Image 1: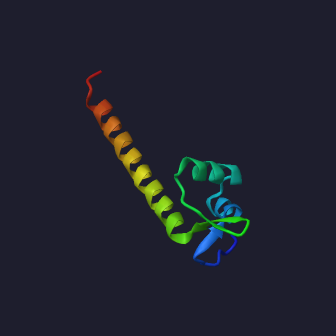
Image 2: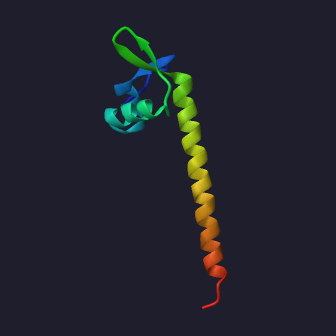
Length: 81
């Protein structure tokens, strides 16, 4: 696994590589407003803090989905056959 040097901001391709998604996916998230950026010359950079926020949000969403699935599973097991 490649080591990522911790910096204050990253380019679109770097973030896509870190997350294992396409550059197009990252650009779509930027267009939707899900990911804040700032321009630097002809580059679009994503602040490290924004990347951390996105990851924390994804973790919360995953936990909520897992809890809902657990609740559905236990509700199904409570039903008589």
